[in-house]
Image (cartoon, rainbow, N blue to C red):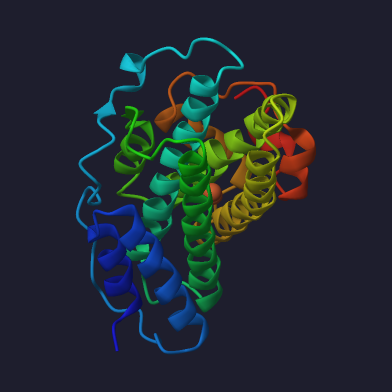
Length: 262
Ligand SMILES: [Fe+2]
Ligand SMILES: [Fe+2]
């Protein structure tokens, strides 16, 4: 049977979203069933394979969204989230394959495989919503900011946990309620349902992030709050953007002492 790190590398090497999704679900089920029981030593390449479209742009070159409330605007919003979720599939598998060591407990892999499995569902549901609106993932340009953050933290598990789940996914908790409200006002109940499910799952992803961040700090003898604030200053230029969704962050076990006034 395939090792876990090889399975992760296979998802990362798959270019088509449909294949990434199918493999993510298959490998997550195999892990849960005990059919994958070895971690192995496979390491991912620097960048995952991606489909030819969307075209990736620098975050500053992204076209501005216009015409609030229009169908085009709604498609742009769902497309942007679909892109984040596709990145999130790769980010979860990359975390597993890049940082796998014999010292990491099984619960570490359990958590991030669950995250990968859920991200695959998130992307699939958004691709369905885009199709229902006459669009498809790849129709619009997308930005490469998430993978840039992954590459900047590829050398250090603690930095990766600080920036990916505890800055970027936590930011998702801050901005999603407004997006849900916007879609609700437009009468798009199906998209609202998808975003509500994503929001619930993402609380769990931030919870996993802070759990393993604290675990890794304890292992290194670091104070988690000080370590987080230091890593954010080092790897996330410009600091953190309020307002924060304190209730959702609290639900994820992510205390305000970490992120206020960094
Ligand atoms: Fe997600
Ligand atoms: Fe997530």
